[in-house]
Length: 182
Image 1 (cartoon, one colour):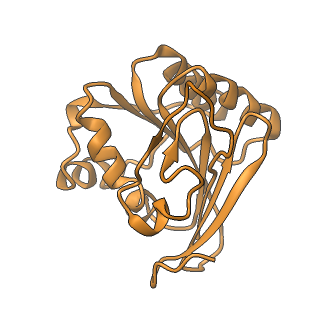
Image 2 (cartoon, helix red, strand yellow):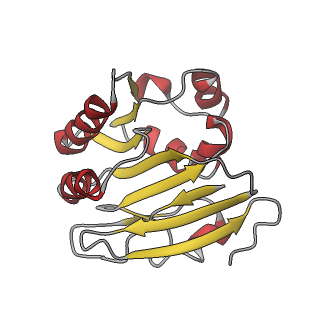
């Protein structure tokens, strides 16, 4: 099961980028991933399955010459997954924080640097205060932001939720087998 947070707050400084997956784009408010938004993926899947819905976007972003920052990503198979999907790994920065505090700090710094095209983090469960801090950092950047959280569920679904600055959100449930959206 995957859950992803998608914002409904769209202003002059934000943009939308196609996910590269038609049924996802058709369901998202602005036709793709929106900047200045925290996109949260809640999943029991391996990193391969977690990144499945992001690979087309990461491929495009790796061509921009800016960093794709992965904070606290599972290490097993990551490099081969990225390379086998055509992602320029010379533009991927892996950060291995010692704890959740360092993970959140590294994500915040990567967002505020202005040098990142995407920031992906695996910080574990975070509270609303930490989510708000990341949202404020995301608001100041054009980087796409994704949080991955573990779950014990074994459902073959992707839950998409997008939180904007006001903590409002859009929620989608995608069946991984059929591609249908509820």
